[in-house]
Each structure stands twice: as structure tokens, then as C-alpha cells.
Image (cartoon, rainbow, N blue to C red; front, side, top):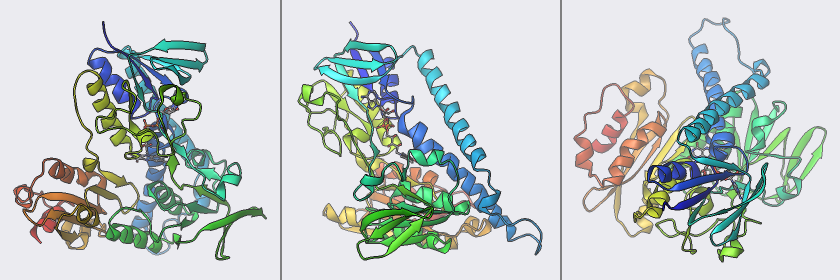
Length: 454
Ligand SMILES: Cc1cc2nc3c(=O)[nH]c(=O)nc-3n(C[C@H](O)[C@H](O)[C@H](O)COP(=O)(O)OP(=O)(O)OC[C@H]3O[C@@H](n4cnc5c(N)ncnc54)[C@H](O)[C@@H]3O)c2cc1C
């Protein structure tokens, strides 16, 4: 008899798990309470990249203006942009991808049950949805319920009057000014987009710099590029309250500073919310970081796995996807571990950022002695020819034998280039191995070659 598996959540953690389970012969059903495809497809990775693409077109247009005869052409302004068309394009992209994912599930004959799943026993879920209340038995379940945006105090008291990364995609009109709370990846991608289309953008961050956890050189390079384009940063300052008057929303900081904007987006992180999901029935503890799992992605319950954002390992779609596949294989008899060190981390702003493995501080914290080498795009032919000279490639090696431990790339197609180095980290390649590759000329990848030569 085939194994019965229930997957709760159809995001990038849940749907690859279901596909792999089906491939391996399990009897699998996916339960989804909201939009098929989860946060990533509907309110995350995909719609934000559709927005960023609009911003990129404006950015490229601004670059072209430098080559026009004085007085010719047009000066782009936010007023020229049809906000409804921008939103419609984003909606079309999302709908296309969601439809093709739904078709894939139909073609593979994987059952999709609409509704909210609650554990009603150690081998049973109760699903409440359009079909009423149904009960399903399972041998094993995969929890892939994701996370939600959080509103820390004092913003918590004003959730309805402020916006977040879910609702910003549907703002009824384009604000003249936007204050973003949070200088992490999500906050920065929106900052980059809205600044590019002519909105006055500022970012409030409690910590001393943006992109917490990244190498300080990375944070500095992105910050200084953003600042050159007029984005204002307020670091190390705590908000005390929010007031609303004269069409403006104003954050009052503890030091008395007031930051006013037409709109405020709170992008201060995401947290698991598993209230009412019956985890107590299974004796499974959880907190805002989610449910703890071992390296096989198994929770403390013997037949419940947790993948993606909900286990708090790394809040990224591709990490969720890999975890989904690994959990599926483990359920079907394999014993595979998830390696968080090889997850690339990307920022799709400009300059782009791609990092993988360990940075210098992380490697040293593990007791390793490292050496780093860096090459700047300023010295790379393709970068100069295409006027994309911001940024660098930095490599981190184990000082003992020059094994590649990690890489940080800012600028260029960093989110693409990083995969070469992900391979190096995964296969534990050494500097000399990477030097054996011939890097085509002229390409931005030559910056890797330059960094290897230093
Ligand atoms: C604005 C934004 C931009 C992002 N950009 C990127 C990016 O460029 N690259 C990247 O890697 N990551 C990005 N992310 C993060 C990425 O979206 C998440 O890491 C990813 O979606 C996590 O996948 P998941 O399957 O764990 O959860 P989710 O995608 O959140 O899916 C969970 C699903 O479970 C459903 N669910 C929850 N509880 C129940 C229940 N009880 N019953 C039934 N269904 C339930 C939810 O409705 C949801 O659809 C972005 C996130 C945001 C917000």
C-alpha cells in the first residue's frame, strides 16, 4: 500500500515536496488555505520582481538620457507612470505562473484541497474550506505553512493604517513619499523600485546598517549606491509612535526625530503564526521562528516534517524548495540532510547582491583562519563598456589549503554569477580549481577570475 502524505501549504516548500512525493509513488494531497503557489508566487519573489522590472526599465531609460542631445527626449517623473498598468502587469505575471502551476498539478493528478488544515490527531487533519469540513488521514505530514509579515511595536497598533509587503502590491495610488521600516532584503527591494519610479523613499532601520548578517563591505556598497540615488537612511533609531495628520503618516522616534511620508511600509521581518493549527494535539512546540526540525527536516513528532519558512532555517524560496524535495525523499526512505551553507542569498535591487557560503566573520566565528580576495568591477572591460562599474567580487578561502568557503558579489548579474561559486562551495573546490576555468571575454564573470588572481 502506498504511503499517504498530506502537505500543508502550496508555496515553494510545499509544492516541490508534493511533486517529488508523487514521483516516488506516494499518495499525496496538498492543502492550501489561500492562493496556490504561496507567498513567493503571489505576494513575494515573483510580484516584487515584476515591480523591480518596471523600475529597471526607468533606470535604464535614465541611463539612455545621458546620450541624448541636450533638450531632446523626456524627463521621466512618477506622474508619467500609470500605476494601475504597473499593478496590472504584476497581476498578469502572477496569474500566468499560478495557472501553469495549477495545470501541472492537474496533469500530475495531485489532489489539491482548498481550505485551512488543522491537526485533529497524530494521523489526521481537519480541513475547513469551500467544501465544508472534511477529515483526512495520513501516515506522514509535511508542514509548509510559511510565515507572515510582522508589525513590531509601536507599528502593531496601526496595522490597518499602514501597509506591509502583502498589501503594498495593491496600493490604490502611488504615494509621493514612502517610509520603509526595515533595511533587510524585502525593504531594500521595495526601496529600490519606488525610488526608481520617482517616489521619495527613506528607510528606518533599528540596526547600525542594512542587510544584517551580510559582510559589512556588501552592506556599505549597497547603501552608498542607494544614497547616491537619493534614498535616505535612518539607522540605530527606535520608533516610539505613529501619528496621522494632513495626509501624512509620521513616525516619532525615541530621540524626538519625526519622519513623515504619505505611506509607511512595515517590512521588519516575518514570523510563523501557527495559532489554531492544532500543533498542541501533536505535542509540537512552536514560536515566532516556527517549528524546530533536525537536519533531516523532521520535527519532534515522528511523522511530521516541516519545510520552508516555517522551520526558520532560511526564509528563502529556493531553500524551501530544496527542503521540500529532501523531506519528500526522506519520507520515502532516504536519509538526506539539508545544508544551509550552500543556499545562495540574493538581493534583486541594483546593484544586485549574491552571496553564498561563509563570509569572513562567519568563517572566523567557526574557528577558521581565512584569507579574502576582492576584484572591483571598475577594472573589468564589460563592466566599463556597459556602465555597470559599481561593485565587486569577494572570495573567502580557508587559509590552510585555499578551499573556497564563500563568496560575496555586489553588482553585475550577481544573482546569476553566484551559482558558479555556489558550486565551488558545495564541491569544496580550491582556488586552483576555479582558476582552471576559462572565463569568456568580455563578461562580468571575469571579475571572479580577477579575484582569483589576487
Ligand atoms: C516581498 C517578498 C519578496 C520575496 N522575494 C524573494 C526572492 O526574491 N527570493 C526568495 O528566495 N525568496 C523571496 N521571498 C521569500 C519567499 O517568498 C519565502 O521564503 C517562500 O515563499 C517560503 O515558502 P514556503 O513554502 O515556506 O511558504 P509560503 O510561500 O508562505 O507558503 C505557505 C502556504 O501555506 C498556506 N497555509 C498556511 N497555513 C495553512 C493551513 N493551516 N492550511 C492550509 N494552508 C495553509 C499559506 O496560505 C501559504 O500559501 C520574498 C518574500 C516577500 C514577502
